[in-house]
Amino acid sequence: MASAPGIIAPEIAEKYGRALATVQKTWTRHPDWPKPRGRRGRWAEYDADAVDALVNRLFLRPAPAAEGSPDDLLTIAQIAVHTGLARGTIDADISRGRWPAPDEIEHGVKRWRRSTVDAVLSKRRGYRRSG
Image (cartoon, rainbow, N blue to C red; front, side, top):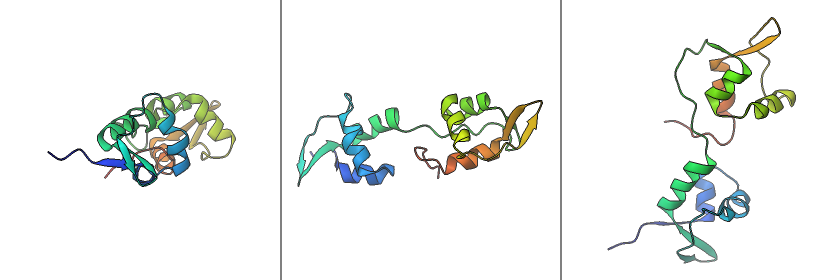
């Protein structure tokens, strides 16, 4: 019986679109990271299915839900719920100029269209691409 396919750090980095250093210095040091099952050249080889399950559970954010109209206006709190990002992360991105100007400001409340939010997320690292 053939064993399940193995995967090494450079392949993990390529598969998930991350830097090799991120895989080596952060991901593989996580306490739940699977134990190496052998070596391939200089690289530790891991069970590909175990790595995939852990990476999807811990290191990738799920893509935002598609419910609602692209024209819906969302507050920062609603954006946090829609995206799974922490409100503080969104606030920091706004203050650092990594978020577009609000689509509407009414009574001091900033709101962005869902389509604007989704466009920002499509350019942000750490989100799975659909399709």
